[in-house]
Image 1: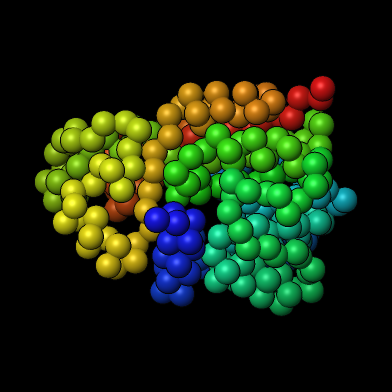
Image 2 (image 1 turned 135 degrees about the vertical axis):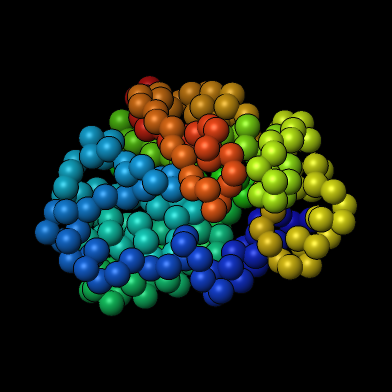
Length: 263
């Protein structure tokens, strides 16, 4: 099956129904960003450190690719900080929220729909910064994403990325939610298509819920290094008890700052 197209439709539906990741920021967030008071997240809770950006609080003249980052949240804030922003997302509904939120505040952005592992629309060395919050969990393979990021970044350009801790996928989350018991039932790497019970997978697809995939730390971090990106900073983040019972036991997310190595 075409995973990208399936997840595009799933995210379109999820965005139309509304969730935390598809709710545009309030007007006051944009106004504060214009005044130099802003922060963004790559993972659910911790704000990205200010020194991870090429400049802060102003990003005037910085070409930013917001990769799989639609929903009217990060993109309009980056634009309010002065960046020239291109939003690239599989979901056209999420992109529309970026465009409408930015337009409401008088910002011009570029919005393109496509697969995060195929950035052939963009020339080599097009961007100074890529902002890529947790989203490669919806991609069957992650190394192609890093290779494309490295290609379109300028030498010295930065990739800010968030991703799931692969250990999240070891457990039976239905049992954890119902009883609090942590029961290991899956091998890694995990794939909804290969690891999920056939009945549950059928129910998930009938409900048009997005399909998810784990990626090893070797692919998430080592893959960036192999693509020509030097990881220069890293932090972990949690979630909340409502989202996962695992929140009390381990950090469920990782964020990295990487720099394209000049050849």
